[in-house]
Image (cartoon, rainbow, N blue to C red; front, side):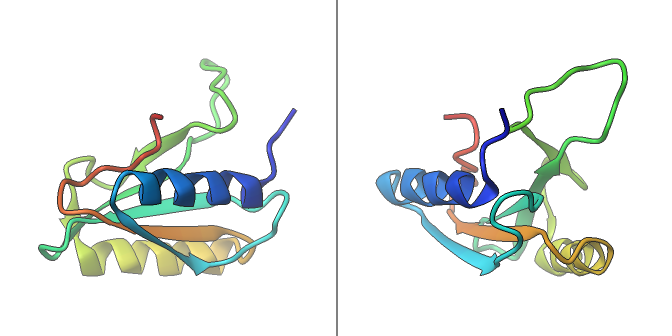
Length: 110
């Protein structure tokens, strides 16, 4: 069974708050089926980006799992933003959550 995106976002926001990081919904998409992208801003001009896993016949991944997009070590913030703009053009129902954390924690593996 697939968990509604809105519920996943609320859980992520709570984990961030409990961990001492700031998190914001930057774009609200379809509450049930919208794809979720998470941008982790390290407040030094760089960001890490996570989003849906690419479709694959070889690996059956858990539905809720997000994978790194772009460079897993981080990219300039403007590059991450430009990538998200392109994704919104392709899928207007997606969600974007931005986490501001100097340590670069995504809170996705909890």
